[in-house]
Amino acid sequence: MTVTGVIELGEIRHGAGLAVPEPVRTPMRWRFTWALAGLAVLATILGPALPEPAPLAEATIPARLGDAAFSMGEQFYVVTSDRTIVPTPRTITAYTLPGATRLWQAPLQLAGALHGVSAVRGQLLISTQPELQEQVETVSIREATGQIMWRRRALFEGVTPQGQVLLWASPDGTPSASTGHEVLQAVDPVSGTIRWDYRVPAGGWLSYRYSGQTPTHIVTLLPSGRVEVRDAGAARVLAAADLLPARPPATPASYVQFALDMMLVREGPMVVAYGLERLDRRWSAVIDLATEYVTPTCRDKLCLVAHLGGVRLIDPATGRMLWSDPTSTSIDQAGDYLVVGARGRDGLTELTSVDPATGRERARLGEWTVIAPPADHGELIVMRTDLATSRAWLAHLDPATGGAHFFGVVGGVTGDCEVRAGAVICRRLNASVGIWRPVPLP
Image (cartoon, one colour):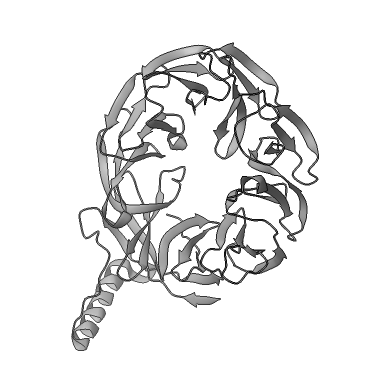
């Protein structure tokens, strides 16, 4: 582990020098004179209260090109690739966060790319979906030691609010449409004991309603047009109704999406919103579920994003459109504001905070990549990467004012970054993982 000092870069506002800072070349004697003058002014203004800039501790987790690297809770994992030129046994290695201390390394006999990961009750769940679909597999690994507790020829679907692991199992291990032989199982994450199972009727299509990453409801769309809603904890039927036209069993079911406590069902260019608990009809509106999707980032608001660009805000009580923005490609809740993003330069996103009620612009925030979800008070943690030098500037961004408070600079990164356990975690250009901490409070 190495430690590097990072200087606090202060606060700037959009429209006033928001470009990535560039070094200015001046003669040495003038640089020395200006430095003394600057220190004198700061000392006069701030006096003895001037804080020392806090350095960020830097650590590196080794990884290679093709390895899967991800954080989960307070640990970080590296799963080696099974596509190496010289075949080598696949391993998984665990590290602490944010210290990057190696905890253990264990063999991992899984083939293919990772399909999903999660953690519950001290167990790490990993599912793979290789090119040969009959080799789909899910394993449960003890987070403290790397010991594999159980493995199933099934696809991992999520962890229920009760802490059970949902698995889609079929006779040949394929995640294909239902033939009447597939079973949705809920198993104990530690022992693998089956808590309940639900045999999906032939032609039945499953859809899940999530709260964050947690599946809370299971919805079955049957060929007869009947819709059944189950709670994910026990597969108990909460509501059932004939809502869809009949279809052949091999034909895909109509588009269904979930919004807050509602299920949106496609009816041509319209959708009908039903309450999820009783399947009571709420409203209908002109929404094309084939080209638009409901984003969960707006919390208690119903936000739609079009696949080809454009966002809309819908009144969840009536289905009436409140406002739209055809130029934006993303929308998130940030405190009392919504933040919309439009495509900017070099892969960055031009961010603007808007009034949720009207969509009117409140502040232009500049071009950033958001690397952490908005905090409860609305602050965003963002970065701006200089592609020429592979350095990235880290900042807290205030959606109310557009003020950006820089707190660090990291180097040699790809831009694939996140904030976890009080640290900024980035994949480096050499495929290793860099960790910089602590992330200061705004």
